[in-house]
Image (cartoon, rainbow, N blue to C red; front, side):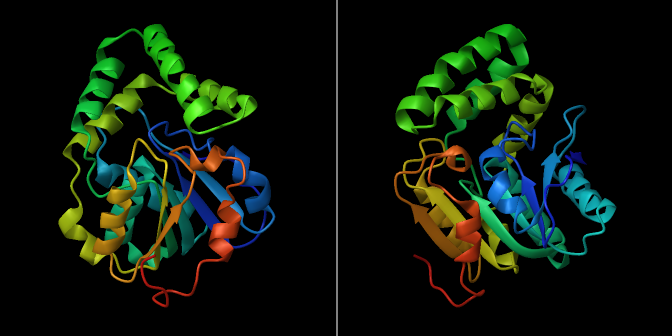
Length: 250
């Protein structure tokens, strides 16, 4: 695991990406965030039979290499599951944790099995063709992502090794942190897009209810690709987050 070139100066903010693992899909938020934070975008390892312990240790190494004792962690989708593991194992390294469109257990196991078969057994060019056929209309019609952002998304995911996707899907198939959520002691903001068709808001509600003192925000009209959605501001969300433990679940 590595970190892309940091953006901006200010308090440290670390982005843990979704299944793509690239660290690049926060691009629509980088300008605002870089004006207020020093943004570190994590890129996951792709080779080998890595597990959550490896990924968490990789994040700690990113923090160490950048000289960060503590940081605000923004963890999206699959990254949210790493963020939760990190909060349980290394709470002293987290200033605040934002978990965006994520879960303690992924409920649609059929979706995961289909994705695993696709990434492990189908030639890469066909995988990308299938993703293009599915993601393009989904992002355009269901999530209203502009064409330039859709194209950048597709370009980024096409460059990622399929072996990394496949291994991350395997980890999700076995994931169940439901009973461990009570161990999360860091200030936590759980954010869910109301129109998310990949991770329903019910999963985010269950996540927030399981974490002591967590704050829940449901975003009307926002889907799974929240960070690319016009009008969505991660900076605004961070700035409006109340002090820890002062706000009940919304």
